Length: 134
Image: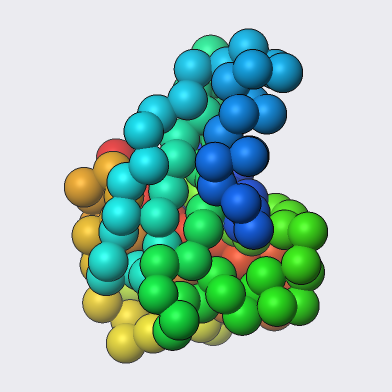
């Protein structure tokens, strides 16, 4: 069902500093910051040959990323994202197997402009999983 790894998301307390580290220290191509209001985040994508790193920073006080950073002030890996060809078919298959879809269960548009869903970490070995329709 799942396809390739789309990205690994890292919550960061300072988006500009994290971007500089990837760009200046590691020599990676780093995108400009992009606000994703629906998800309450500002994101930067670090382009790699085979995937991306998504740097996440809270956008507003009600951002779920702020809660993560409150518990992890230095930041850390927040979620992993896998591509799926059909997000509705994937959702139905997961729900039938007992996996929990977070939120209202309906896909939302993610930072790449594609539908996404998040799956409960307790169902996936403690890892928050995002599915993105490719």
